[in-house]
Amino acid sequence: MDVELIFKIAAVGIIVAVLTQLLIRSGREEQAMLTSLAGLIVVLTLIVSQISGLFKMIKQLFGF
Amino acid sequence: MNILSICALAVVTVIFIAALRPKNAEIALLLGVACSVMILVFVLSQAQSVVNTVNSIVAAAQISTGYVAILLKVIGICLVTEFAVNTCRDAGSQALAGNVSLAGKILVTVTALPLYADILNAVIKLLSYS
Image (cartoon, rainbow over the protein chains, first blue to last red):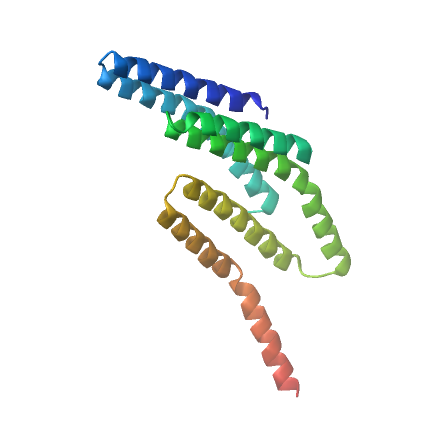
């Protein structure tokens, strides 16, 4: 469990935002949309394991 | 992990969220979720000692452990529900948050139902004594 995850997600968000703006300015709206979707999926894959770990911890702590 | 680190983490995350929200609202939301998950994991890894203490007190007082199991389960349901409700509210869908909160309340009642039955049985027993 480390704080680097927060910075990683923030970095992905900033990079995706910049790329989306660039692609929109150069007139490629579809690729901008796909880029933001790809960023969302990358961040989701980072987070899902953490959420699963949290739920597992609650499960074994409170005896579900 | 102490409270100072948790507060610092939350403030840093809020600054990132405020920077990201106008351009990329989805990832800002996910950043908030990640921070809350991290804080909860930090805190719950220390809550094991609380559960152990409660269990030892109950064992010393010779109360039935089934009641404490129900109590702990209800606390867990409340925790998970609160997490989901806060995330839904953060994303701006108030209706979903309200429904999840309702589901949590109903499930807490369902989980605590054996306790109600036991209380009712005790009352009936007392009434039959008098």
